[in-house]
Length: 144
Image (cartoon, rainbow, N blue to C red):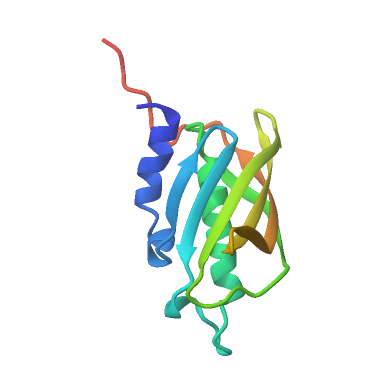
């Protein structure tokens, strides 16, 4: 099983992402795409999508891209800027990519948006930094 298969399997067990019905669309060594529908459970007291729900989608993508090399990683810092309020019922998308990385630190950016008549309407941008522990998520099978 390669490292991308490992993170896909792990993501299926992410209870928090499952609660928000977050779907992993694609993951490579340097990119990630996911989406969720902004249903009634994601709305705040004003009937608009809660900032925490928007953040949850971006953070789920961060956990996938940050752990996609079978190297257990932990968040160091994350910052989100909100640009617009999407309408309830819309599908919220996130596309993330690695900005830079080393054997210990990774820097990422995430664009969160809705499709607005074939154009991406920006909802938020998140930047994040993580620390790579060097510990495998899943041990390699022993040969022999």
